[in-house]
Image (cartoon, rainbow, N blue to C red; front, side, top):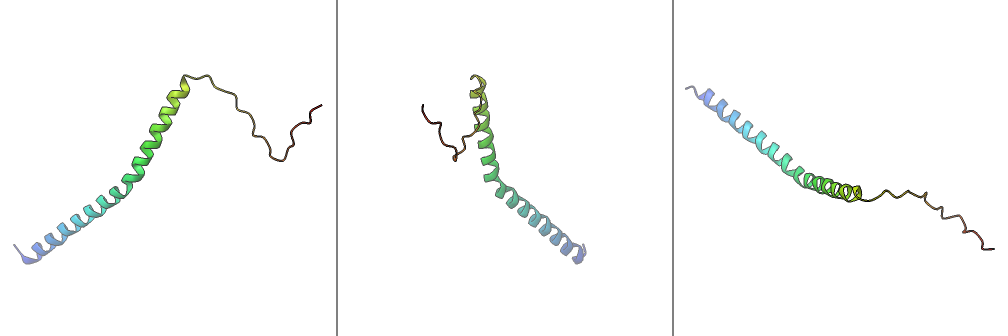
Length: 73
């Protein structure tokens, strides 16, 4: 084999290994966020299942802080 082909093969293999390592690092960096998302989804699913057995309560509008309570007669 020609020495140029061997050198090109070595460079190509090094490029593939480098790309693989870069991809693996990017995936590993996303693992904590992925686990946090799964935790939030599991908590939301548990809340949904718990609320499915309860009767819905009407929501009251928030009370404004600047309003004074009614005066007693």
